Image (cartoon, rainbow, N blue to C red; front, side, top):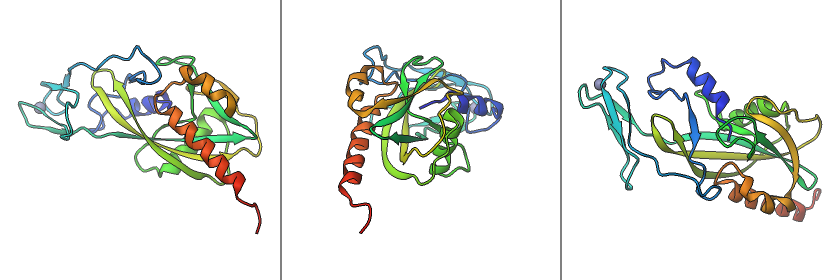
Length: 225
Ligand SMILES: [Zn+2]
């Protein structure tokens, strides 16, 4: 998931009342599966959007939904998960992955994708992120799956992400890494298991498992009746 560009846009619209922490430094939790260095989020405080009083946010400790309420003016913030969308581009036996250009997770492997913006469809966000990060435009996309993960936002703490993926087949064009991506590379599916410790996000092994199933299902289906 590449957050930085969405971060830049969010910063440009920093007056939005739904963005009290500013998305200024969107950090991953360093995915527990992918990195043993992940640390538990700590209590964080940020100024109340309405009155400026420091508001304490604690990571959710149980199943109860978390609401953040200003102790002075009672301004209420719902602690929602954030949706993100991406595309698995396949070419023969390989899938297109990106090397992250920036911290966090610099140099780690990433899937073209990023956070959705208000007003976008899920597939529209996935196409936009693919275009911005690789220059590629694909025709038909198929639904692959949905995956939970976790990010940590500096000044806000850890929150859940909902990651939606589509899969499509490359037809033309050379992917050119841009934005969050330093490099774009076609990685053979057979090599993915060995690259696991280089994955940027904890949910990526499940995505690639489902990608292999998708390919097996496609290969098993006659292309014409
Ligand atoms: Zn307040």
